[in-house]
Every structure is written in C-alpha cells, then in structure tokens.
Image 1: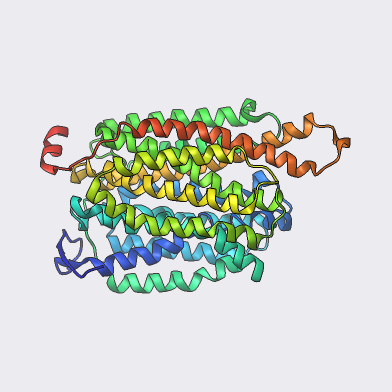
Image 2: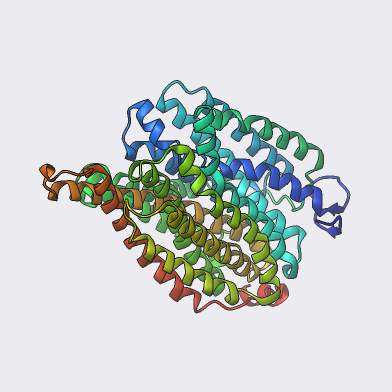
Length: 492
C-alpha cells in the first residue's frame, strides 16, 4: 500500500493532505478482530451448549444475537457519522467491543456470556460502516475496487477463519481463550488509531428522530427474532410467537421507510434505492450472506455431531476455504477495476449454486476432503460476488448518499446473515425432528447422526433455491461508471 496523498474534507483541524496507508491500517487492524467474532464461537457452540446446559436453538443466539445487534446499530451509524468524527466513532466502537470481550471471557453463566456478546456486537455494528464510508471518501471511484478488496479481506476473511481459530483454541486451551486472546489486539487497535486515524468527512449534525430509531429497531429485531424462534418446538412458523414478531418486524420496517421518505434529514436515506444497480446489489448481498453464514455455522455442527470429529479437526477443515477467501478478496477487487462486475459476479453465483446443490447430497459417509473442497469452492464464489457487487452498487450513488448507502448495505448484510443462520438452523432442527418421528427406533444405527444428516440436507435444499434466485439476478448486473455530477443532477 502506497503513501499517496489524497484531498479530503476534514472534520478536525488536521492537515488536508491525509495519507491513505495509516488510515487503512487502522481500519484493518480493528475491523479484523471485531468482525472475526461473528463466527469465532461457531466450532465452540457444541461445547458451550453442553457446558451451560442449553439447546442448539438457544446457543445459536450467541451468533444470531451478535449479528442482530450489528444489524440494528448499523442504520444508526449514518446518523452518528454526522455527529461524531471518524476517530471518535472508531475508538468508541473499539472500546465497546473490548469491554464486551472482557465480559464474555469471564462469564460465569450463559446469560452473562450473551450480554458480553451483545456488547461486542454494539462495537462491531458501529465499526463496519465507518470502514466502508472512509474508503468512499479517500479513494476515487476508479480505485475503489482494490481498496474495497482490502476491506473484503477483513469483512470476509475474518469470519471465514473464525471457525478454524475457534477449533484450534478450544482444543488446546478452553473457550474462554477465544476472548482473552483478542483483548491485547483490540487495545493495540485503539492506541494505533488514536495516533494515526484521521477524520475524513464533514460533520453535519443532523436531527435525531427517535421514532425512526424505534421503527428500525422493532423492524430488524422482530424479523430476526421471529425467524430464530421458528425452530423451537414443533409449531415452527405456525407459532404465534413466530408469525406475530415477524409481522411486527415487517410492519415496523414499512413505517420506517415511509417516515424516512417524509423527513428532510432522514436517519437512513432510502432514496439510494432509486439507483437500480444499488437496489439489485442489496438483494444479491442478502442472499449471499444468508448462504454463507448459515453454511459456516451448520458445517462445524455437522462435522462434530454427524461425522463425530473433534472441534480441532472441524475447525481445521474450514481453514483452506478461509485462506482462499482472504487471498481472493483483494484479487477480485483488482479484477473488478479492470474488467467490471459481470466477469466476476456471474461465475461466482454459478459456482455458489453448484456447491450448494452438492451440499444437498452429503451424508455421514461423505469424506472429509469432500467437505474441504466444497467449502473452499463456496468461499471462492463468495469472494467473487461480495466486494465486486458492493463496490458496483455504491459507485452508482452520488457523494451525499455515501454514508446512507454503506449503512443500508451493511445493515442488510448483517440482518440477512442473521436470518440465514436462524432460518437454516430452524430448518435443520425441524428436519431432524421429522426424521426421528418417522423412523423406527428399533431399526438400529446412529439415529441422531442420521437425523442430523436429514436436517442438513433439507437446509441446503432451501439454500439452493435462494442461490438460484441470486444467479438470475446477476444476469442483470451492469457496470456503473459513477459520474457523480450526472448522478447528482439526475436524482435531485
């Protein structure tokens, strides 16, 4: 990364000439360890479920709850970025994350661990849009692909290697070290950013609309809670707790959107959806995040419970895919700058569909190497889709929509991932329960492993339907040139 100078609007009395390299390093160090925690507990969930005596549907809230809080807070960052400087937001977010990490590490019971995870998520939710918005301000459109690829190294690589690190740490030490090891890095990030991170956008101090915050929280919270509750018990989506909370969520989101369109200074300016490629990108990213995060949590559970592998082996099996994803993200960014989105996104979505179909065929006799290859192909497909699609969608927006566009896409990604985990865990649980109800318990064999296999296959069948829908959407992707003056006039 070079030390090229760039002109930016400063929020504080600092030099107008800001070096990109120290800013990117600050963002990458903090972002990596914060986002890593989205999946760091995946391999440890089975052990945590046993230690705290809770069910699979309850323990998955350590991941789903994390992503839910991130999804709730991200929309608010568009508002906060107008009130606080880049440095204030970043350091505040990392401080929250560090406090949550300490609480989680010393938690004596499941409720305390969950609280710690939610505090961690509060910091992460504030951090992600700061990273994206800063990139949009310090890089011109023609260089954003490579810059976004570096961010992709963090946003995609960190959660991708989370299960592997989790397996290694749990096998060698204990689950508490999943948190203790992160603390010194988080403290270093705070110190480094206090020295090197510069402010790159202008404070506007927009009005705070409490009703918008309430609608946003009820909307995203209701939807994710409803989907998460669907797998508990046999009632599924017919349970009042499920369909009522989902309904409240969708109604609240509708009210939120209507209110944003009426406000002179909306908390989240949904007019960004007037840009067609941005809208298509938003839908595509939801589907990809649902597929990726659900797979990353289902696979470790199946490898441990279905194939009876240790946490160490299950985590190690996911390492090649995580490494390939990290290596491919910057490469995909550079290729995007050169060839545009279609040459990457369409093949990526095709590979995703093929891999998910192959996952529908897995059984307890499937070899470990097959799982490693399939997971690696999945992560390659995700790297070909995520950052190129996101960069292409954001490039179509005028500058005044940068903070809102990044907040919208990151909100939808986090909530999409949370819904994906909740939905597919629910489908897996229900499929396993149906299998046990219909099988003769005297027939012999490992019924629990067979039941889990049935549930996993059903989950991937549903995921395949979403992936095929994503592939159809990619056929309509077009490259956006981002002539900001033209865009501003067209949407004013």
